[in-house]
Length: 311
Image (cartoon, rainbow, N blue to C red; front, side):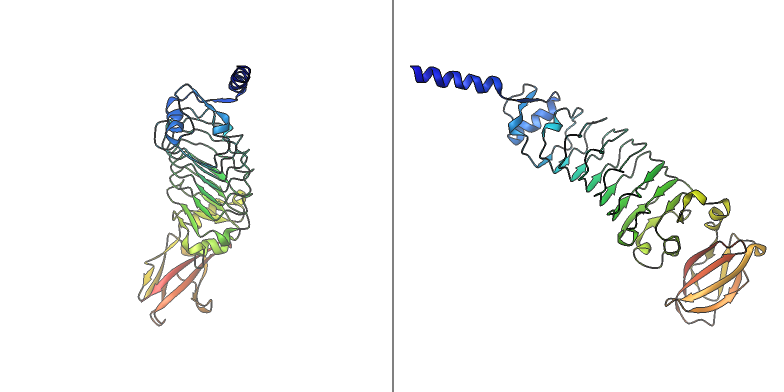
């Protein structure tokens, strides 16, 4: 009888001292029950059942409150996409490497405490700004279909993949020393004449070598080493183009007055200078068929480089 009372008292001691985590969102807790981390719908879960979980996928079920998530302290990967989240606090998830919170109703996101974060997907929300200055390990960012007007990734030196299109972005800073490794970059359907600050404006504007020739951007985009010094003339330079890009006999420069032109230089695909002209319409029928690069230089010193194909 004594042993029975001893073990009974011990049982009630552990029960009374067990630590629980509040999970007020009914759907959130239901998902934990489905995964076997909880066994009864009572608005809480035993903390010891969740603080060793490294991956959690609770997408697409209508969760609106993520209270309790900070006790999942071992999480490395968290997928909370396609829910009804307007905000959340994940400041306690020090080990988090991957976060997918796309397709919610988020107006802001704070990942400043998640310094190990490498992969962030937050597209299809209502974000107006995002601060990633503390996420120095970040490699991939998907933030398209939001309301972002500027994006500063100058401190994210490992960034190699960025999808930020369908935002009213007028300024994007990816001058982080790693542009040569960024083979996936999409900034389509952003603000007209947006400026993207890059490591090498000449290479980015020429778009003739990898990875710059894989970048998907609007035609009006201006690449610059310093967007703070971009002038009206620089923006107008982006409006100048060669028509058509497939040339048979006559190379024609559009949207440029002859009095503003200094010269046009044509290079072959190996970088050799083939011809120089000071005319807006330059015959090139003598050139052999192939790919050429045309450098259009204005009298004020601005220039751009465009690719043509001679047929």
